Length: 213
Image 1 (cartoon, rainbow, N blue to C red):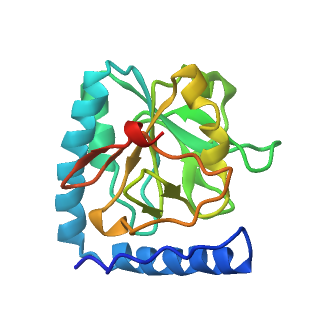
Image 2 (image 1 turned 30 degrees about the horizontal axis):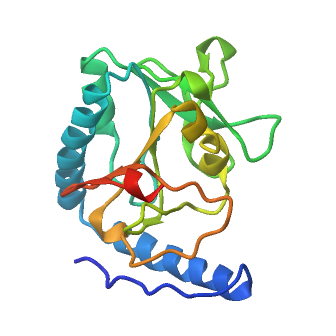
Image 3 (image 1 turned 180 degrees about the vertical axis):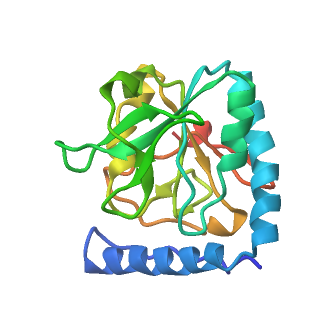
């Protein structure tokens, strides 16, 4: 069952805004974790087909994804679909020398993974498997919550906001959000560094926000 859409707290960047974001993260993470395994599998299948259609439409060859964690919409089915289509898949890993930034490494069936400091699985560091963010065609973007204008809220680390900060001026990598329907809220309290999404895919909808950018 989808949670009631949270209301936007109008305020300046302050303790009140921070508390609002914290409340949204808590409610939405709880909602997506409450989904059963059959529901998760069904929703992932639906959303993966929709995402593959969009990736194919723009003829993307290099696509970054993430490995599912904390009740997120599952990505493994989509990864397998991309492999079957001969599309290169990349995963993020925490940058070892530049705090708050990500590296992207090739991901295949033989890639060795390890858990990082956030308890998230990522490829072992191998510079021969690395790709620069501007060489990616699409970044399938994780998030905690989104609203009707394409605003995105992550976990608060800013990793994807830094990665995607200049995407609009370069035209790539094109970010597409990937989330459960229950992760939508009425409006998000945003900060100046938050990067809005041009598109987002849920199990039931393909949402285009380019008119909001």
